[in-house]
Image 1 (cartoon, rainbow, N blue to C red):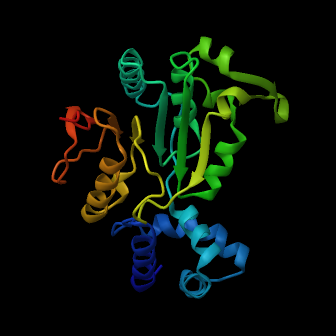
Image 2: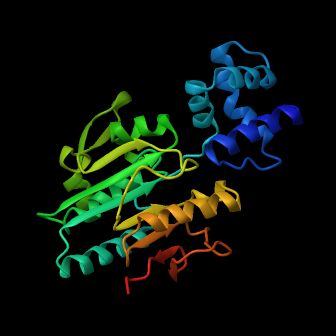
Image 3: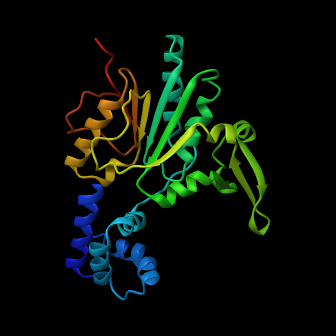
Length: 268
């Protein structure tokens, strides 16, 4: 891919989704776009760039799907879910009975379903939901299926697998594991572009997971994102970011509780 074409993809990714495609990633982008070029019978990335610029709309969604990274697994950074449970227990003792959690960049669903697994025993009789959003329609479709292979559910403790997953035969003699309906109905899946402010939610939210998302944004985009997270979080509520992420250098009222865990100050 020539430099000018790559710069065109960089501009579109940044302007339309806030994604910063770093220099030196042209080969990776080329590999991720190869399938779409074959589907459209296009010979070069420059031809695809022209098609993308002319088509917009659905083609932009396909482009963003192709370049997005969607690695995740159940109980990833498990200490965050322990902190979520502790935060909810404090609120329950104070009499709260309505809870809303947001998983931003939920990928194929493992994160919100993990949150639902740990919350369900804590919130019996409460009104609670988890909003799970992602830019990629492809991974949201996978999350809606809520069905995972043996190796994908290996990190789930056996007791939780037995309680929240239903096994059924898969292709080639394999076993698939489907999240049970009572847990799936707690998770609301929506497409959301984090570059488009303000977000449609009103809040207040009792916790936000925004993990391994900011690493793809430049500083101004991260600052705008954090401002929106602050607007939505309830006083005293936690924000969980990736273990490799920090809010250092970003103006914020959020207070660092420990690495990758921040909290809105209590109302005064």
